[in-house]
Length: 207
Image (cartoon, rainbow, N blue to C red; front, top):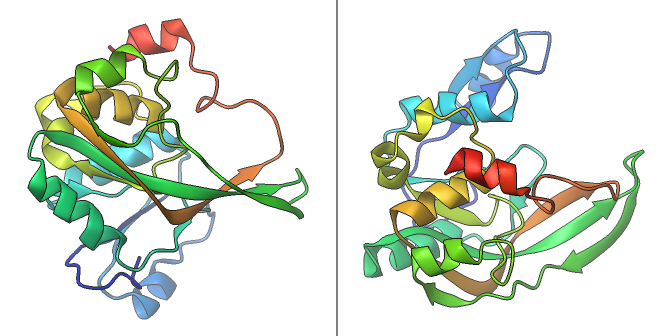
C-alpha cells in the first residue's frame, strides 16, 4: 500500500490474531498507521466493520493480509474512475491468483479472467450476481465508495464479507470493471469458499 504513487490515504490495521501486542513494532516501522489490536478473535466481518467505523476517506480499500497490490497506480486509476462516474459504488481491476497447497507450498499462478468489463448498471449486475456476471475474486483489486456503505448502514449488518460488500455497493449504485491486473490474490488449498459458492439463503440474508 505504501508503494502507491500520486495518492493520499490513511492506513488502518485491525488485528485480532496475534497473542502478543506488536503495536510498538508496527508504529516504529509505519508511524502513520492507525492500529487496532483486539485480544479476542472477532472474525473477518467484525474486523471490516471496526475499520469502517473509523475510516475518514471518501473511498475504502479493504484487502486481507495475505493479498497485495502489484500496480503502483491502483489508487490513482480507481479514483479517476470514481470521479468520472459518481454513481459507481465500486471500481475493480483484475488479479493474478496464487494457488498454494494446503501446507503453504506454492503451486501455480493463474490470471483471473472475469466475464465482465466496463460500466454496469448496479441493478443489472446484482440481478445476475455470480450467475452471468462474476464478482471480483477478492477485495484486493477493488476500491469502494464509502458513502455506499454508510447510506445502507453496513456497519450495522451481521455480515461484512467481500461478497456482501459487493452486494451493498450494487444496491447503492453502479460498478466499473477494467481489465488491468492490479494485484495478487492468494488461494490456499482447493476447497470451496464463500467467494465461489454463494447460496441463495446467504444472498437473501444480505438483501
